[in-house]
Every structure is written in C-alpha cells, then in structure tokens.
Image 1 (cartoon, rainbow, N blue to C red):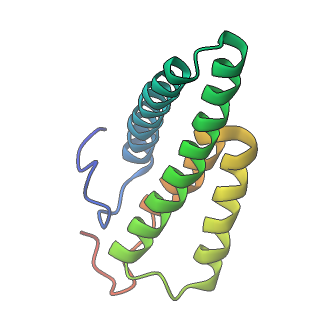
Image 2 (image 1 turned 135 degrees about the vertical axis):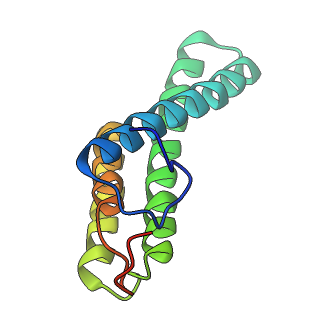
Image 3 (image 1 turned 180 degrees about the vertical axis):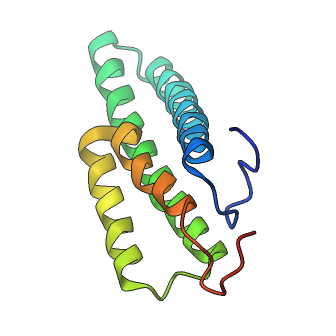
Length: 121
C-alpha cells in the first residue's frame, strides 16, 4: 500500500493510490503545521498567529498539490494531455477551498493513470 511513494511514474492500483493519498496528506499536514507554528511564534499574538497558521496551511496545500500533480504528469509523459492539465488546475482550486484533503484526491487519481509511452513503471 505504501510502496513506491516517491516513484511518480509508477502506475498504482486503487489500494496503492489510497496509500499515496494518506502518506502525502500526512506529510503536507505536518509541513504546514511546522511552518505555521514557526511563523506563529515569530508573530507572537495568539489570534494573529492562528490566522496566519491557517493561511500558511492553505498555501502549502495548494502549492503541494500543484507541484505533485505536475511531477506525476511529467513522469508519466502526460503534460500534453489537456484534460490532465485541466484537472491539475481543478486540483489547485479544490485545494484552495478544501486544503490537501480535497486537492490530493486528484493527485492520487493521476497516480493510477498509465504513462503516455504505454509502460507501467
């Protein structure tokens, strides 16, 4: 389930895609929490720090989803597929409104697609 997490060209089955989703969701949450906590300490005020942490978390989610989507599409030679590019933009919008929880669904979907060259690994 959690194999080949850094192999973006690997064609996953549903169970592996769910593992990919869980792993990268946890990584993005931890990274956003760490970054938000550091900036919260720098700001100093509790209310402002919490609001800043939420904004940082949202930004991290959007950036992570877009970067992961493009890395996967590049590894699978699918950057010329307009539908996948459109879905990548949709993933960014989903992450904007629902964080990594919604945006990473698209990313996990991309991991189940074939390479454009027809190879599976």
